[in-house]
Amino acid sequence: MKRRDLLAFIALAALPLALRAQTLPDRFDPKRDPEKDLLAALARAKAEGKRVIVDVGGEWCSWCHVLDRFFASHADLDALRDARYVWLKVNYSKENDNRAFLSRWPKVAGFPHLFVLGADGKLLHSQDTSALEQGGSYDAAKMRAFLVRWSAPASAKS
Image (cartoon, rainbow, N blue to C red; front, side, top):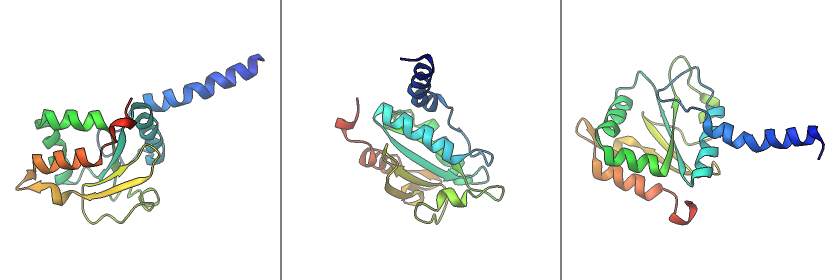
């Protein structure tokens, strides 16, 4: 194998690792490229036998922060989510509504909104999070049922 071919092979082989290693946003950032983030999330999901949840919202969204606090205060559900999904936050705000990116999926009526994707990027479910609410937070039983129902089948995990 020629040196040039070997270098090209190494570069291509390292690409999925580079995509998996990319840090996904932990907040809604209007400056992020959601296409690039989604590619990284899908690569990671495929490698880990998981699905992707695209969390659409914004830093302006009080219920988005409630959802973050809910997972932070429910270690069991946070662990379940992380074991079965790659979580991707996508910004929707006045600064950047990511209209072109979000146009591939059903219209969002409220925020946060969750899209469940297979590791191949196919939309599996569109979740209005108001159905998961209870009082001023989220219902643990409903959230668990949602996470379990839409997770990848055991045979997809390695």
